[in-house]
Length: 248
Image (cartoon, rainbow, N blue to C red; front, side, top):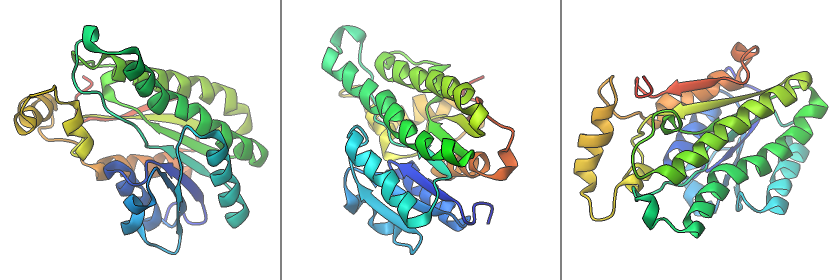
């Protein structure tokens, strides 16, 4: 129970990776607030220490309300896990619209500013806290056709490093996790238009992992627990790669 007594907010709690993270945090004793666009996506996370919030991570007022409600309910905000994100179908840059670029940057990068800003308000006062962003190993090992997605994840990592040095004096730790190709529904969304999803999954994504298999959401949740826990009390500004060697 490494997180007993801690209050953690998780974005994208209704997604495959988000659900796995929430479940692991609850197993470790945390009180968890989950944010997703649809509350129905979080129904299976029914637990007396879980509070679901239906909100858009780009809605500043709604996100401020989530943090305020969790703080009023539990008296503290110890952690934030930015697990929400969207994929880009493999597309040549000449076929990508500016609106598609903006959507990827907004959801995968701008949302981090909004959620982390709210977390910082409470963590700075408490002189304690941990912020984790789930980015992507593609930021350092890019693939063709994912230029806009990769840019958004590169921005996420740079933002995390900048925030780590800014909040260090307040004892707030800020870190990134780079997953490799993960076995979630989101993986199929990286497939090029008209390509065979199953074939792409095995021939491109799974085969690119030196350890020989896709990353499971549970692999990521273990890293999240570590970075939220006191075991990582001197870890900040780092990028933890949970990618089966994909980043080598």
